[in-house]
Length: 85
Image (tube, rainbow, N blue to C red):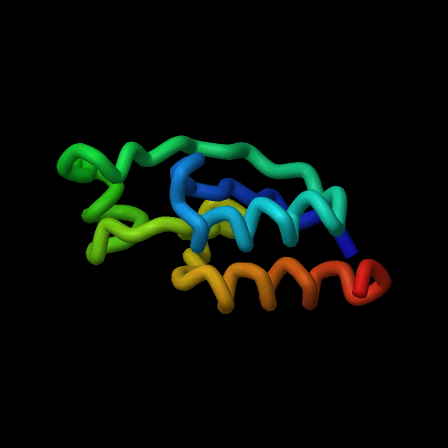
């Protein structure tokens, strides 16, 4: 199995996004982090291409699939690395 390319859209002060960051840290899966500032209106590209609700975290997988909601993101990451459980 090839390594999944992950991009995590998060905000450093969001406790929900922290769940995804902790899951990634636990599995040591490499990922790119993109900061979305929740204190200002979301960029149009984020609302159009990533999450129409403007929330974080959002996880882009292999430049095509998007996983939304912190619990689903954490579960997806855990499923990628069941040995980390």
